[in-house]
Length: 184
Image 1: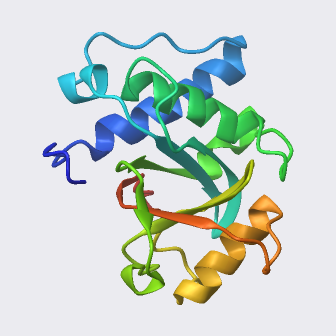
Image 2 (image 1 turned 180 degrees about the vertical axis):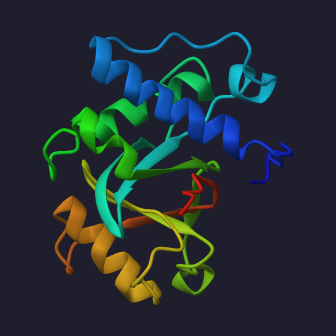
């Protein structure tokens, strides 16, 4: 991201916060309070965050915000992790018994930039947000099976219900991706 944050060494802290948030919610029905022991980056920075859950190679939930909705990145991660686990309309809520089989990744989004020329897009490097009126569709970058700008835009427009003939505004963004490492 272009905001000068040094993300090195933060993977464990970020993905374990997401996992703890889901575990806590599934046990108590409440959101985890932000631990005061977190790094200053998580406590003092705002940003959009997407949390993705995978079971094996299959998506099990993905919810996020492209603009900050909470006080800081820590809260954004906590709320979006819980939403990915229980509120993704494509999947039934995650059960506590499934958690050991689920791998979590957290994407922290850069600010959005309007793109006038599709040649400035690259599905490996940039995610896209497409907008037509009040309809919006977002696709994260570097997704398996999404190899061209045309595919990326078609999928994002489809998610929003935007028809191919409708005019769209295209935004791009980069992400810092933090992935849980599963042993075995």
